[in-house]
Length: 362
Image 1 (cartoon, rainbow, N blue to C red):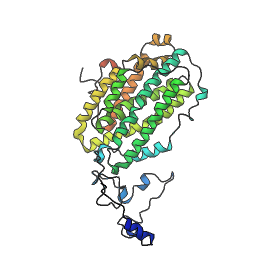
Image 2 (image 1 turned 135 degrees about the vertical axis):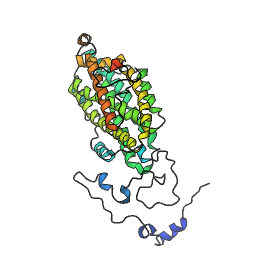
Image 3 (image 1 turned 180 degrees about the horizontal axis):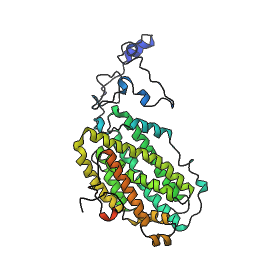
């Protein structure tokens, strides 16, 4: 049985010209508050005015009603479980959203696929294996936000909007790396269980805090470093453009995750040990990735340019790349207010060249 019924009496009155006009005359909203566009147009920051511009730390309701609106007393409860601003917010959210929507690109049109050259078979195989791993890991950064989006209180709509751009970004990254693997005669490479273990760790996270730390700070941070390196070692201008475009997207996601963690810890420093525990677990699996041939050797081969040269120089290139990846990760942790150098959960053999890094497990 329906809990509500249509007001047919109102319909009859309105047809006779007897309108209600309560919404027009009796509103208590802020009439006259005017958002003014800046040089680039009307941004999210431009509309942070009046009561709409105030994002509550603890929203009084769990509805989709916009902040600043006149809200019926009997609006339904949407059942949101993330109802604290600190759980999802960061100070750079609004700017990151604007950047995201202004820098969308197409994996179909914006990559010069017709200019892809024939490569040495070993180099092509290495590129395809790297693309296989990257296409595999990128989609988790769509799946994880999608899992939590509907749980986030609508008063934090800017956070939800940004996460929606991340879902689209990562779908495009998955698309572009699969296209590259299949565009030049190579095909998909090997999918390893250790990669899947890290993705499962993120997807099984019991809280948004846990999953965001593992994904934005650790997982996507490492991928961002790989994208930077990929632009340098790319075998042709086609791959260079792929890595460059993916890098600009990934940088936004990592910037959000870093500043979200900082925002969270500034408001509740007691959570630091929880975040350390999340990263302890994630770093353990990342250590396994750093010793997996299907992850290590493709980049080594691309750096060296041939199997013979790769065997001659050994892991020198891989060691250099790994130390850079770890160093950039530690810098992000420092910036977020969660220093990890003294307790990095990785074997010492993997920390060659990383300043001041150690492991409590050693």
